[in-house]
Image 1 (tube, helix red, strand yellow):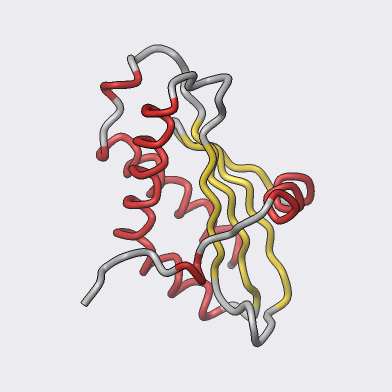
Image 2 (cartoon, helix red, strand yellow):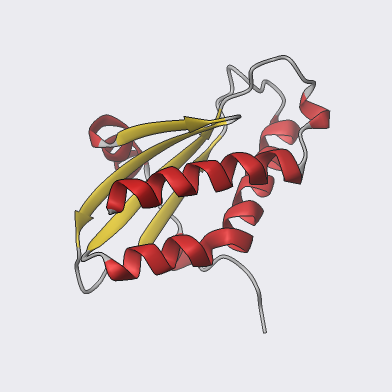
Length: 132
């Protein structure tokens, strides 16, 4: 059994990212900036679609950007059940773009799974509170 993030849960394409960032609600916690767009439920795109972004301006090295993107995906994958339960109760689908915002106080190599996870838990709680 593969315990990976399904491709159907990933938001893809420049236009999809731009629409969520342009029209969505912005929430921030720690090192994560989250853009959230609630859309009417449809049969073909049901559920949550996630997009992950790490700006080149804030994280100049590609290896660091890829590592942080992997961390964000893994944190979401490990903690997605609470968010999915909240969405199932509502009659809406979510499109979420999570952007890494490095404050510069800690070196990039010290960013850990736990720090990203704590930021994600805070953002997920804010998302669930907006859906009620």
